[in-house]
Length: 67
Image (tube, helix red, strand yellow):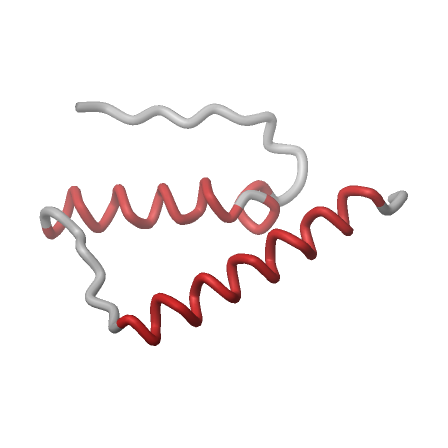
């Protein structure tokens, strides 16, 4: 199985696309070490869900602001 990522490399692509960065890290880890399954407690999952919600709200605000 091959993965190809194409982008117009004008500027920093990974900081602006955290999902792409996560995909690349996860794919590299799986190719090297096999299936990746993070072990998290319910409290950790809840905290991450809260942080994801805050990040999503911040992203929506950032998109509406002029550059």
